[in-house]
Image 1 (cartoon, one colour):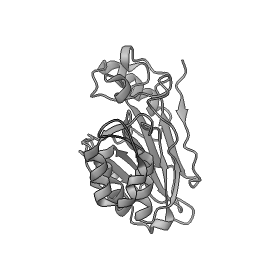
Image 2 (spheres, rainbow, N blue to C red; image 1 turned 180 degrees about the vertical axis):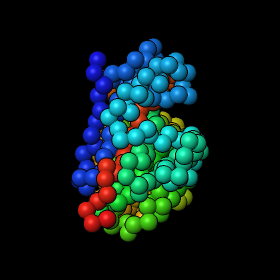
Image 3 (spheres, rainbow, N blue to C red; image 1 turned 45 degrees about the vertical axis):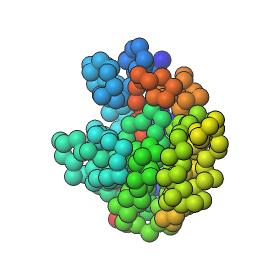
Image 4 (tube, rainbow, N blue to C red; image 1 turned 90 degrees about the horizontal axis):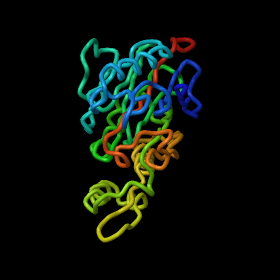
Length: 249
């Protein structure tokens, strides 16, 4: 099966490159079949290396991979060198530096500015989202919020993301209007709309040009990995970079 790469549907400047991988293609077997890019999920390391090499072939450089910890730290990918930063977001203003995050239900968010001078990638599970990973990344971009756009990638959908009352209470404590992103479930459980929470938090920082957010990882097992659905599974990558200096820069 050929590797399937999704090009985000957002009006990014021409010099901004972005890709979203799926599970289609690749060489991994078993629960990681087939295009697993995560090297921390129990897959054969040789298969992961082969998959990453296949991805690298369509990128301007090796991605700057992160050691994601469900936190709120955003790092400058251009300064990572050969280290693997412990962070859940990366940004870059240097052409050819590829920001990347891995997900399998958590929400990937890609950023760029209207001028095509800076980009960012974020891993936003509910913990990182509540901790402020989106806000920290927006601040790190150092652009007026009205000049920033975001794309929300495939993540666990509202009909599949069941959380406890403590999760809802934490978000509502920050923003009473966040209650609209939760629907009552059984007993003290709630259905959580992760993309809706992300949109609210971005809007509160002045970022309203937000696209995507309608693909559910859990409900499409042929296309997406899902930790909530399968437990042992692979990881997909969301990537963004600058192809060349924007005109006039």
